[in-house]
Image (cartoon, rainbow, N blue to C red; front, side):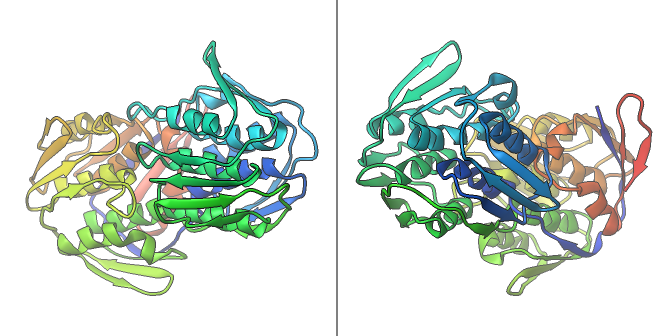
Length: 425
């Protein structure tokens, strides 16, 4: 497996362009199953999760062609209605084909999902919602099986605002008979982007981006072109990278309004942050001050930025408390940061960080996608060399991260696995 090797101590300076949002592209690609007409999606990031979704769509019978950040999909007929374990185990978002398959094709067989090991993320809300829409849902031998002649509109209350659950049910409701109301819906920008794409195709959706989404079902959807929104987590990661190195970075092609909680904490820690229409510039002093952070569903501080802000707090002055409220197992990276000299004590879902201002390079191992990014940030601030293994997690959600960081002045390279050499970024 590939490894990332970083020599710390170089302040980041310059400009970096943000790629399309992986977490917006995946449901948008899954939604192409709702129509036979061609959909052309642009600003799609070249990451492993997107390739996995394209492979899955191809296995189901879709025609998928990709050129750069442009992906064209048409689904005239299905070869299968099954999303197999071999694919779904590598990417939880594969479950997003469940709603579209049942809604348009009347049946779906989808393996129970896998993905990052950051805690239990049950799909029971997806299944109970589909059952309320009139589907017959069972779980057999590790597979979800759902059938429905045609779904029927209803009111669905989500026990908690699940993002993929909201997306799955919103897509399914587009072709249901009657009106569906999703209460306590997730409000993430990626959901709004999916709704915007569906509306272009003839869906009748209101309330996306709020906790009450109303979908008036239609008989069919058409094709459409759509540009994916910028990746707010990638943008936040590069802002944190500039901050932890005492750098001066500008991120472009982003949406500052999607990053309000992150920007607020960076300013609170002492960074200068200037926002423009589609860019953010950050200047950081040599050392920031500790701040407390608690993760929440959007518009709160994103759980996907928790590992990065924790790395930043290790280099800050004074104590900080990082509280994880979204996923119960998302503090695994603490052990790896401790290997680099971080002073962190875990108490339940709280991580108490005593900012020492010093980290030292060490061999560390990534446990999930965002932990990988947190370790990269730590490595850029550490004294000496840091080697990060299991970076296949990183490749699931960051496009050319070593190249982008290298262009900002980071001393970073990818070392290929068996039979490969070292590739400088």
